[in-house]
Length: 382
Image 1 (tube, rainbow, N blue to C red):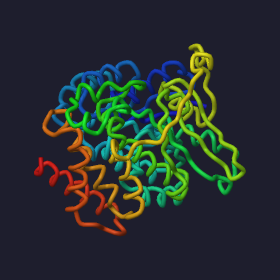
Image 2 (image 1 turned 90 degrees about the horizontal axis):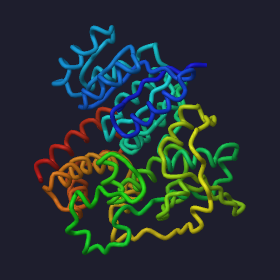
Image 3 (image 1 turned 120 degrees about the vertical axis):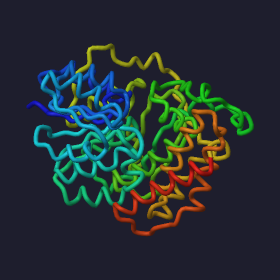
């Protein structure tokens, strides 16, 4: 069976690795839609190679270039976030890979759920921002979600064949980022260049900074709560510098299952695209002898105050996580441009939480309004 894929965020790290796998298995996957944010030249290159029915660029100022390059090939083109969301209703694909970064993944994912598409979810912010709403919609839809994040893919694999009632804890591993051994005082003066030097993973700039602050781990805890319907108290983060154990599940009898692999996103992408089946890889497998020492340690809440935002968001609920996510998007962009300090990322999030009105039971329009209000507030504060 050939899976027809819509790939959102095709020019980013997850998107380009997804296309690597499509190239390896042309008899199993066909790309029907490609969508990117701003990188129109790479999008054009991908469209020429994979010949989708539709190519979408979010940045409307780049549309003329996209249309000029692809129209002679018979490839439809469109621009803007609304056009991308509307495209989720198209009948020529059955699977949506959401590899966009941040809030931008929410609306097209919701539209894909409404259209009954299966979703390979690499955009954790969809469930961070609106987890309660999205999971409710999934219960009423034929859509299935298979996680692509390495940590959630690991948990998904460990839970396969297990009784959900037998789960005692989900243990999400974290590399600790580039500042694991630094003091809080040392991180006060770090530069964007230093923060972008992740010791294990090759990722985009936004997720790399989120890893350095460990807010990505707070987001993963929130996402896991909704993905696996587990109480927040049963989800724990642990620092594992080698990044070989991608996450673990502890059961009520004391047994712990772990999923191991080299730090390579091709593995969880391949598993999600294969519909939770194993697609072979040509490269040499992991040698345990190369990783004779695997260590684990508790995260330091003083050095990584962003990690505490996970229990705060889950305890308060409502639009709290939406505020955190929006404030972080502005803060990370400002840090990368040298406009705020590294600790200033956390500080800006706290100021937004103290200012944006709390909504206990938000609807989709409330999430959209909260996001826009938080973005506006934080830009003004900076």
